[in-house]
Length: 139
Figure 1 (cartoon, rainbow, N blue to C red):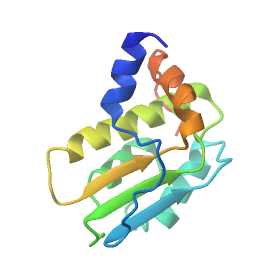
Figure 2: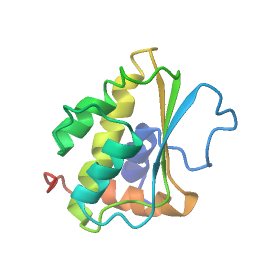
Figure 3: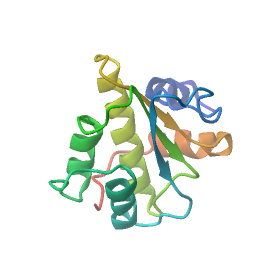
């Protein structure tokens, strides 16, 4: 694995070691396996994340909600993935970059601790997707 891929992947702060052991005061958004389209992913976030009515159902609105969470009282928010969602590689890469950006934002604030978890066997796929050129998502 090239060093530059690892630098970007490391910067994301994604976890590959499973869920945090202490889930007290934690709000968990489970992203199930097999979500192939942006629409499916966004609908999953809207329902499982209990997003507000104003959620626009696109990647810009997803970023807005993931950078807000004012409707969540828990200190820790875990976004737990069963796999890397989205069949289209450019959409998947855009989604991963969105998550990485969200995590970078939350490092500057202490209102919530936001954790993004992927299965360990998805790490190589994530590194490959993040190394690809950027393309705007279809959602």
